[in-house]
Image 1: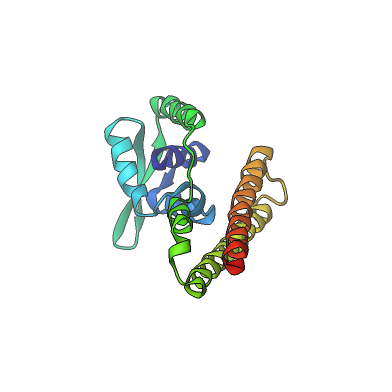
Image 2: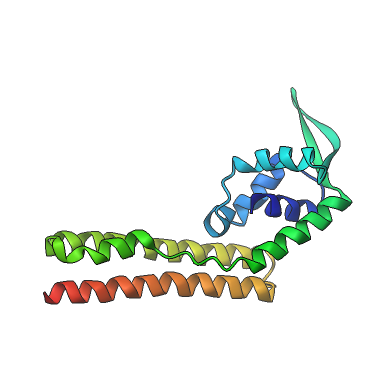
Length: 178
């Protein structure tokens, strides 16, 4: 995933590793794609070694130099290949920790189980707000012109979080009755 996002950033224009990292942070890639900022530099080095990116030039930045990377023709093809692989990945991410906890909640003191479920629900509400904030920032950056496919992804993220909140609330209702 990191390689794909690095190549996607370079398909816009040549950039330094820091610029790529900043763009991905601005797009909240850690949240929606699981891309850690530190992994970007590692991916750049691998992509360079594999011939998918190359250094276009060096810029002086005070006492340091920064490399400006550009995508090669084989990098463009590799980006398409990675995107196709992602589209074909039917992996489902279940909240396995939550499912496991629910399975054994009947063995726990009711108050403690409810307390932890409320904590989880509050974290999900925080996540929901963070995603909303990310969408608003993207709308501002793109002057309200969100690509249709990006909008679909955001809608799905909202649905997933809201669905998990609903699950927790249903479980709390059952536990409180017992």
